[in-house]
Image (cartoon, rainbow, N blue to C red; front, side):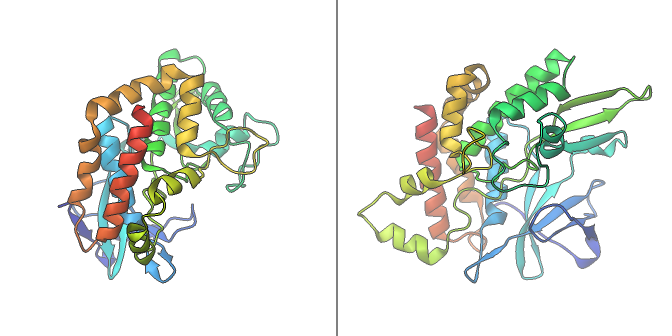
Length: 302
């Protein structure tokens, strides 16, 4: 079973202002770098599965070779949550994390960096354009960035991540001694809005007993993400459909990850589910997450 870290009150460093969830940085006694603890939210009086979805996403990313933030399951008092380790690169004081909204605002006319929801200028084409501008002059780093973004698209489709908004991807920026600046792609992070983590146990039990409709396929089709297909769209793209669009338009970024997905295999993708402790994840949620992964895996390899 995955380890669960019990957080002591005196580990807390400060509050983290970015985002909508309650979270704070902690100083673990066994690590020189801080970790960000994020509480799992409550939905309809029930604690959501954002702790196990964040952990499972990191484990799946690891199997696929996608750069990602290290994650552990954690508890603070009676509350579940997840711990995400600060990127080692940020230990260098000359390096900072530049989120997508800042990059896009500097490159796309009239882009509103404060508008997280219904930000229909947050398209894949605009993302690639902003990344290209940030990493201009370094072809190897630009190629690596495009490659990793392809991995993030496949991961989002696989786990049905619906929250890849413009603060959930970033570049590193280093200011060198001669005041010149260099950028490169940061690992993927913040995957809690995935694998049906918001669904209540009672709802899933009803779905298990409903033989009239394939609820997993229905749910996967309805999911909407934080990246838009076109600037005129009212809603973000479905993560599976976005990956399919990217494969048709930029196959060189997606195909290597689809091959990797086939090589890793379905069983290796679903195996981490069995390592989530039973007091951390209900069997109904385990059933749904497994079936969702099998569905999205089949779609992607097909």
